Amino acid sequence: MVAVRPVRNRLQELAALIVKRESGIDRVIRGPLDVDMRTCPECNYPVERFRKTCWVCGFEVGRQLVESGKT
Ligand SMILES: [Zn+2]
Image (tube, rainbow, N blue to C red; front, side, top):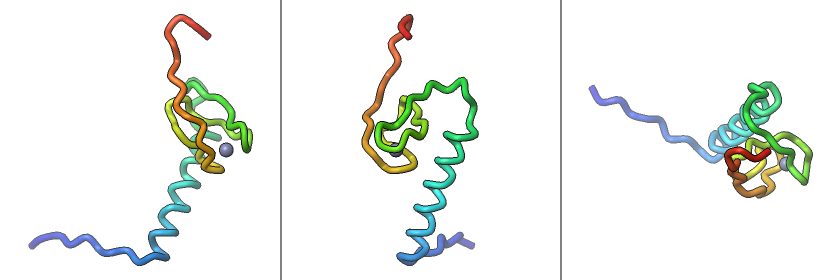
């Protein structure tokens, strides 16, 4: 028997996006603090340096790669 993946409707897609956003917010708030963070200029929530956009407001912060040996 072949597994069939259920097709999501628009409301389910929207709900999935909201859940993804909320889980991202949880991750940056409660995540390990050893991960290199900066704050979003729009909402001041923490953003991981490797992320292009803020989890919370979606502001495009751009990737900020850490140079080794510099703080
Ligand atoms: Zn933000």
